[in-house]
Image 1: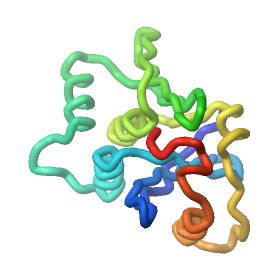
Image 2: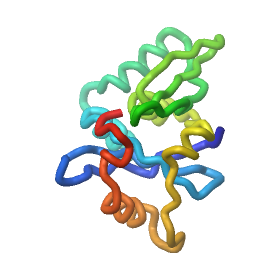
Image 3: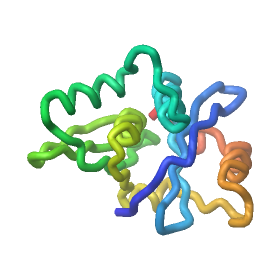
Image 4: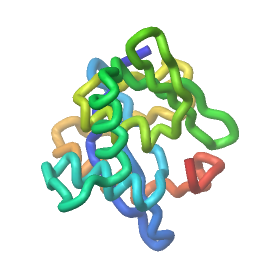
Length: 157
């Protein structure tokens, strides 16, 4: 299992489908995951440091977790089946909850916990984007120009 970080969100045209791009911390692979618009907005706002006037769902989840005195320890992207990614949220007291990767990542960003991806998931869906000298955002744009949701068997994960 390798730690990954969120590179960013981009809306793929013409389908108008958001893609979350993760990158291995100690490796060269990128993991693209097509996600919903609400989750994409939530992740992008958090990455940009924008605080909405009222809490978004992921902010509310964080606030409830804190109010109840619990903590999220880490997020893991654990499986890929028929084009759909699966994640787990690992909390204190050995509690694990299944989640969509987009929701799990949105919450992980808000509570500043590590995000991991199983090696099998990285092997199956991870991509090496050539030319390490380019800016990561430019590499992401080029990558998105070369793939479509159909490459991963599902437009919505």
